Length: 285
Image (tube, rainbow, N blue to C red; front, side):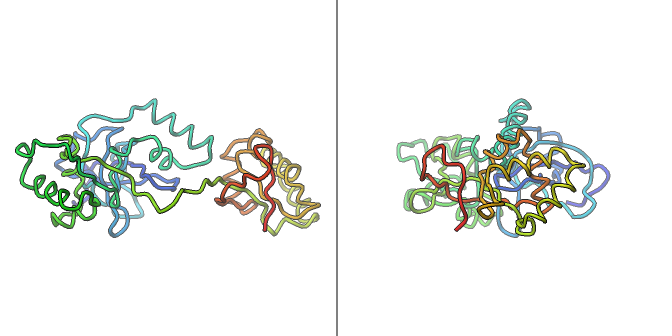
């Protein structure tokens, strides 16, 4: 769809561990129908399709890229209200995660349609006569396979996205949606903070601390890290981000700024349960 001065755009959060929002254009046939808090199916990358949540509607054309159009509008009315969106924002900030991760955890699996979502047959369903030709086609495939991915449905129908068809099948009660699970039990991880190697030597650390006197909150966070990890004596320690924020009394935004500056490293690591709940320091291997 060509973009012009009257084109409407939506900002969308996707169920991905990414902090930024993503902007898509609204096709003519959806003008006036999309509302904040509604789910839309959008293309992300070359082949992936995700269910995103609209968090803003505007006419501010992005300057640095050409937007892709919204593929499908899944809701006639919002499934998430403004108060819930504000709560998600707070949860993301408090737990140092992304809005997309909060969305993925908060929405029931039936409301999250992704390319690899598993569509499972409801074997108790009997009202096939109410289905359209496309719906019956997919239902018959499911009778043979028991489950199929959204991506496979799209291929069968020769469509970019099959979300609209799956939405109708869900409304009939003919199928249910399951999130794709990997083999085995998922490992529990948490965000870990460590000091950049460039500041491990005492003189480098002290120089950094002197520089941060102009940014007192960042200095507080740095000194709290040093006290908890005792890196000056024992080598650079790894510290859970939640513990560091609690000890320093600073916000995740301050920590994020220091990670972006290269002062701290931040990464995911499997939780070390040795030592119980009071084990606070995880020494590097």
